[in-house]
Structure formats: C-alpha cells, structure tokens
Image 1 (cartoon, rainbow, N blue to C red):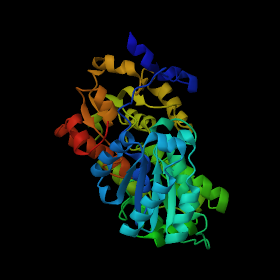
Image 2 (cartoon, one colour; image 1 turned 120 degrees about the horizontal axis):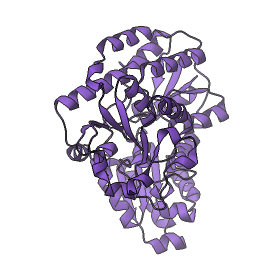
Image 3 (cartoon, rainbow, N blue to C red; image 1 turned 60 degrees about the vertical axis):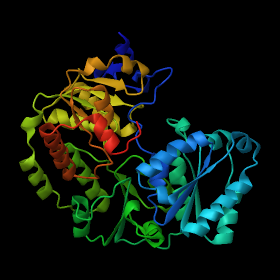
Image 4 (cartoon, helix red, strand yellow; image 1 turned 90 degrees about the horizontal axis):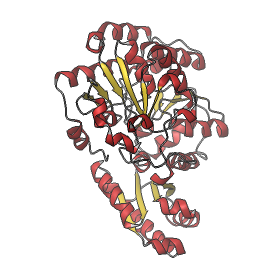
Length: 430
C-alpha cells in the first residue's frame, strides 16, 4: 500500500532517518499563512516593500490583503533578467524612498524572494544610503519558501535582521523588565503568565506584537530575561544571550497538566522566585471535562499552536487514543522526549509526513478518526470533527492552554465546523 511509505510507527521512530521522507514533497496543508513578512510586520510603525518577479509577488499580494496588511505593504515587480544582471538596484532605492516619504515609517522593511536567496543579492549599500538620507531604520529579509528546511531559514534571516536592529539599543539591564518571545498573536495582559510575573515584581512585560512604537521595541533590549514560548523565538533569544548576556528560557506552549507544571518549575529556577501557579492548576483540574475525550480516536496535525507531539501526549493522558500525528519535518530537539513517552504509552500511533504526495491517494485511511486537531489533520480526516487550535485564533500559555483546548473541543463537537469553511474564513493559504 502506498500509505506505508508515508508513515512510521512511533515505537520505531527513534532517530532522524526514521522519518518517512519523500523524494519529492508536495506543498503540505500545514504551510498556512505568510510567516516571515507577517512576523516582521508585527514591528510597530513598519512598512514593507517586497521586490521580485510578478509570480512571487502575486502570492504575497493575496496574503497582504487577507491579513489586513495591505495598507503597509508595497510591491515592486522586477524582471528576472534584471535581478540576475544586477540592473535593478536604482529602481529598488527609488521605490524605498518613495514608500518612506509617503508613509513616514520608523522601520522600513525590504523583502526579497527566492531569486535573491539563490543569487545572494546584497542590498546593504542601498539600505545604508536610505538610512543616511532619510534617517529611517531599514531591515532586510527574504520570503523564500524554497529555503524551508534549509539553513539559514527565512525566519532565521528575519530574526537576525531584527537582532541587528536591536543590538545598539541596549543601555542597561532593568531587573523589572522581561520579554516574552515567540508570540504571533500576543498574550493578553490579563493572562495567567502576566499575572504571575507581575506578582513577583516585573513592571514591564514586552512582546513584539504589543510594542506601541519604536521606543517600546528598543526597551526590549534592556530586559533581564527572555521567556521563549515558541521555537522560532529561540533564534533571537540565543543571539541576545550570546551578544549581551541576557539569559533566556524555552517554555513552549503546552497542554498537558504535568508538562505545564514542569515549565513553571523551570521558570521558578531561573527567576529564583516562587510563582503562585497552584491556584490556576486547581481551577483547571476542576473544569476539565475528560469524558468528552474518553476513547476518542484522534489525529493531530502540525499546524496547531504548540508541538503536535506534546499535544498528543496530553490527549493520551486525558483519555484519547492517538491514531495519527502529521508532521512536516524531523522533530525538534525538545520533542524527542514526547516521542519516547508516546512510544511507551501509545505504541500503535503512526507518524505521517504531511507533505508526502502519496497521502493524497489514501485519504480514506483516516475515515475512522473522531477528532482532528489542526487544519492539516482536518484535510486528511474529512469525516472527523475539526478542532483547528490555530495560532490565528488565540495565544495562550500555562494552564490556560489546557482550558482553551477543552473549550475548543466542546465548542466544535457541539457545533461542528467545515474544515474548508474555516480555512477560507481565516484566509489560510493552503
């Protein structure tokens, strides 16, 4: 059967080479969104100019409109031959200047494409001239899907650019300032983590999406600690620790009660302070309706907020049966402990390569799934109840994540939604 080539049983998944790679991968349904440009446009008072061939820009034009960034996003179509021959630099400079004079941003983002990545185009001189003439910070990034899975990734390039912007802004360490990195939608100021940090004396808690202006963004450079709640935030946190000595702790969004408690204990060690999280734990345990998951056959995708392997562990602990986990690439280093736990506690679970083209031939293999977490899992598990659990819905941390999980299960089980309709409602490009 073709499906055997798309998967590996979790009990046999012990190393990178056990992942079911495909000689030619499809564009998997997990690749939703407009990651690099979208993330960079979270910077306050920023405007982006994207340059490249028309075919590349067409995709971004759609996403700029879908995400509501079209008023801060400009495009300059270029002929491929001009990029190859280096005949486009004057046009790029003029376009940057025109955008800057029209919008008066504090940060100007220049976004290249796969062409620039392949050719190694150097825009440093153009950026320097614009900065000197107009006094505007210029950040360069590459929106290059071609580089997915390669080093440096588009996100590494983007976060490196952000670090370069911040590196001269540090004045002194402020013990009452802390950063939360890795948020796309911001954590609410009324959230569990905010309350716990304020209780122990932190007066300023910064996240990139909540920075009101460039002054707030610069203040992030004076923090005493970075808390990273998404793996992509590690890129920036590691650079900051290396250059400035600001420590960071990686506490990814989790759903399991035991895992959440372990994360808070890790935070306590690095903060050298006690966090009053037990009250949140007690409330959560009282409110979880575990019966709704008992013996349900479940699939988990990698488009969820968090790690699909950690969520799978949590769901098993809550009483569900994990039939399938859809992932795009080899698991991240921190995820192997979850895989080990699943191999001991859910040995019949299969791990699928969500981008394997053979999966499109075998979608009926998932007809027995009851609940599908993540829109990518929902694409293949067409008869299941869809629970998107997407980063475009909410940003949670701590025991609030477990509560949100059950709220979403209850809401979608009682009033099922079409995966197709949900994708189009939220403008996910899949």
